[in-house]
Length: 491
Ligand code: ZN
Image (tube, rainbow, N blue to C red; front, side, top):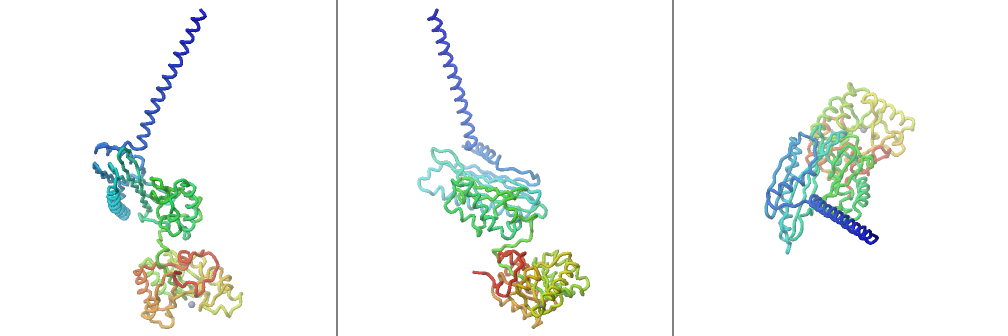
């Protein structure tokens, strides 16, 4: 009995163990199969003919494409080849500017991928079995900024003998534009003047954290304040994503996407897109007109500026504002069209001969005239005859701005003389040109000079814009910028 009992229980035990083991082994086998399927799905199962290439493309694109905008149509193209296969899925927005940009990107891509593929196959002992290039896109929107961003992505795959098909390179091309106007927008439209320095700092820190294990040797090159990398972003309501091709900042085969929440860069984020496009790396010049407003002439100058997409700064006399009929309409228009309005004192005295109290009176009376006409105060001032200094600037309580190029238009009263002085002033980048709005000859010279400068590639900006973009100044700082200051590019 005892022995039987023992035998029985021992058999049961043995049977119990083996059942458990079989069960565990089964679970293990299932897990391996499931893992293998998942692994292949994630890694890309590859393809062996035209039909499976289509499946592979669809699978890859399934996570690349993401768009809520039904108005954007998709243009598809794919071609299977035993050695080399390509597929394109590109957006068609119906907006000519944007669609042309997409076409340009595609053209560049075709050239780049051809070059890249040829080089791959030319490598000695490359063991390449096949290559594939897939281009797709995703779209994101910001309702707050009223923008749409398209991110075109190209993934390069290769398979070498005895190995799996794998992604080896990813390139990204963002396009941003406003939904309202359809105009393309760049970093300058989205960020305030000093954005390059701030972004360089914030992004370097973030990249060093996020990609600490895969940083390339020269990653800082792509994050310096001089780089064009900051143009490569995608906008949404709460964040900006900066995108980098693989092997720029990170050695990973995928593109690097660095998300920066708007809160982290709130001091450089504009509240709304500023469509005035200024590029600080390109030449800028500030035209200034003193002694107005002058009936007829100021309006004519505004017309010329508007026709040429140019802006200028007007240093006006309080007295003229008060005496000129409809000066409020002219000054309001001046500001609405993006020009700057500065104070030039009330009635053009030599401030050096005045007491502080008298200067203060000049300031207050002019501010009052400008406030009555436009509802706002002047943002800069220029002392009559250039007679200003730090002390007088404190009384005006806005930056004081002198000039670099004196056209002597008040002396010559001759348009061609004014024109030749400006045209013979060499490189005008960073300079401030002094003219007056009260002479017909000056208006006539402006009519020639404004399109001439624009054609030469100069961006005609206000003095505050010049201070911000060319001299890295805060135009809210109450400083006196004298004759030597705007001496042009500092090379
Ligand atoms: Zn003057």
